[in-house]
Amino acid sequence: MSVEPRHMAPLRRNLSFLRRWLQNPRAVGALVPSGRSLASAMAAEIDLDAAGVVVELGGGTGNVTAALLDAGIAARDIAVVERDPTLAKMIAARFPEVRVLQGDAADLRRLLRKAGIGPVKAVVSGLPLLSIPDRICLRIIAEAIEALNRNGVFVQFTYGPASPISRRILARLGLEALRASWVVDNFPPASVWRYRTAAKQEDRRSA
Ligand SMILES: C[S@@+](CC[C@H](N)C(=O)[O-])C[C@H]1O[C@@H](n2cnc3c(N)ncnc32)[C@H](O)[C@@H]1O
Image (cartoon, rainbow, N blue to C red; front, side, top):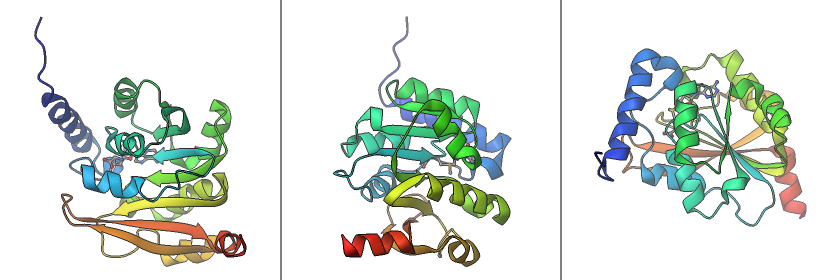
């Protein structure tokens, strides 16, 4: 029996990810999964003391999932939505205690209802929003915002210079955007953005 050296697992995951990208570049949206610093920067946006589940959209090979667990979020409080069946299986094998929902983020509330998951305190997204048509992007973000509880937060990374959610969608959904961090040691460098509804901002001020 051959035993795979420990350092081979990330390499194998990256190669699988690259293969998925070669088959469907627009849907996968990146050549390599997020690095550790970027995944940790995403996880750092989550309030560990608040009650509720963290939903991750577009789990890929599970690097952000790993960072959520490392940040101290219990596996039972994490649900990952991944549309690609091969990647969804990979995440489920890597983290057997995390709930993995194979499906489309545009159907988020239906997926969560079916799995009996909620309430949701944060949605962390690795979706390639810049390569998703604006109409579908609106539906995905609206689903996520509707799924969130009061004071919930939507976290998204981007390789682009501006908010990956367009001004039109921000205005339509009444969202406030904040660039939370800039991760230079990721390849490629990326920013983490945080979004909340303006009403939820009010709730925080009066709390
Ligand atoms: C850029 S990768 C990010 C992967 C991982 N979160 C990371 O940071 O390394 C985007 C992932 O989103 C998935 N994806 C794209 N569109 C999706 C959708 N509508 N619903 C669910 N997953 C989707 C892709 O299959 C891919 O795994």
